[in-house]
Image: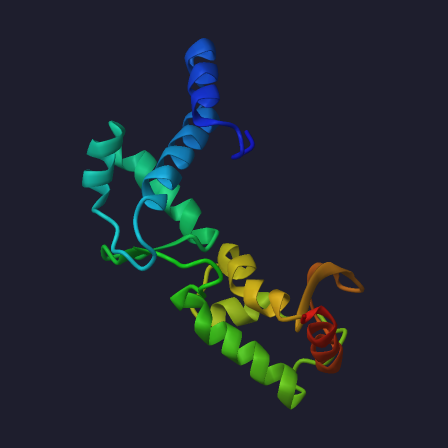
Length: 174
């Protein structure tokens, strides 16, 4: 179910069809997004129980929605109640080390232009689940250092030539 569907349309669809798990999950994700959007950037999120009570739903659905939002880089959802709303383009704190390591590897030649990044190794080395790699690569892609594309090693994150990234930034600047 696309996340762009209006919440009321999802609710009507779920009511009409009895609601599949995916529909209920999409509905809860949309509701939690609206709830979080009312909070200022950097604000600590209420507890799962408080959000569930405010939205009249289960803690399990709130936890699932916040995990999804964490994977997308919208919030930080830590294991020990450490939760807050991220600013747009703000890097997730778990991604800082891998971002720094990849940038240094590109500049010092460890990661050569045109080669695929060893994302499994990088994830393991920096304590990230493989599902978090797309979130961790966002800033590198935005800065033109890495491209998410099909290549000789299959679909993956490939290192771009650092000079090309600099030229792209110059061309795009006003």
